[in-house]
Image (cartoon, rainbow, N blue to C red; front, side):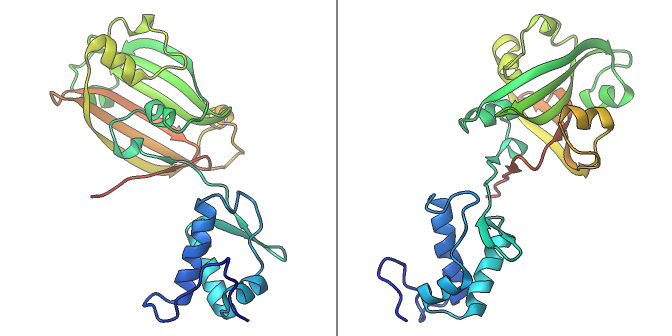
Length: 249
């Protein structure tokens, strides 16, 4: 059976194997919105007839799309378009998570759960290069995206550098933007460590997770353009709601 003119024609003389070409065609249909989230893909038999290829070619192409996270399979029902999680870049940039999310057009809210001033722990004092006994600001926030808990973050900052931070209204606002505007801080670099963990009972409750459901733990130490550390945080991120993008050039 010939391939209908309305469908792309696979090039049998090309270096790329047919399964890669078919996977590319289906990927383009998904990424363009022609195939929408949770919509069923054509059956294997339909794809075989549509593109005049073997069942092996179709299955290889679908397997590639599964590996790429673009489709999922349901036994005895077929293949479906996977809902796409937004790519977030703040892991590999100096934009805060609030700044990064603001570019996606999603509804982002931030709730301040706790704010206190107290002595720095030995680890915080060492990371922030503070004298023993120094005071720090501890800030706990819960960020939601489209109403779903997304990030639970515990932030530590030097109190001497940000003594008036307690008077700031940080509800639904970017901490980094506040530090830039009111304290002249210009973030220039950070080290970040990421690992998979199972959160404790209280943290899981705040993130609305099932018991035992894993999250990504993110530890960060940021410094300004003078090379002075100004922020340390530990965050728990619901990895089922998005994925991180780190570009290497």
